[in-house]
Figure (cartoon, chains in turn red, yellow):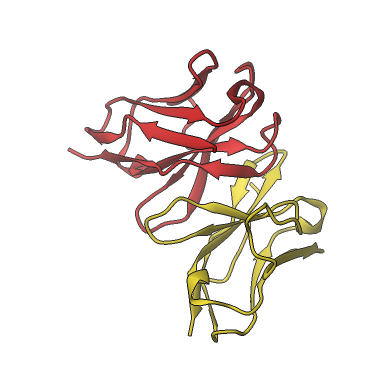
Length: 121
Length: 107
């Protein structure tokens, strides 16, 4: 059974930093591209970032480029999102999502339950 | 940037058919995926690459894609189908793009 478990969310002040983690199990993590998708309260889904299976290629939404960094540790089956210079508009539930294949331009077939990030003073 | 437009809400009578559109420039040339999200839950993939259902998704869910619009159709709607539905594509310039989302109400 595929499982994705996010952690690391919480309350942070504007300008602060936070690192999200996503522990994966039930599939060959090192063979799958991975993604972060967020959802602001009462809003729709917004793609944040994607990473290739080996971690050598990454993509970012313009709204987070230069502030967020996606990475992965295939030895630990874990995906990360380092978030710096956080803004109030970054407040959202952040989902970890698995791509169905090794390329990240495909559908996301499994999602975690999400981790809430609140940016407020 | 590439944009996908969906109706804000769709209502369907119990047992009838609901259609949710996803509009985008030449979307017929892209692979469209659909996700269902119930309140307080993570999204679930219900249709991928326009017309394909993942295992475990009822045959009542179907999709089509042509021209400037893709459509998700829910046949014989059930109370359990009430949810928000999002379309999604990959665009070479915008990467993953999600639609604005449609709330489906079963009357």
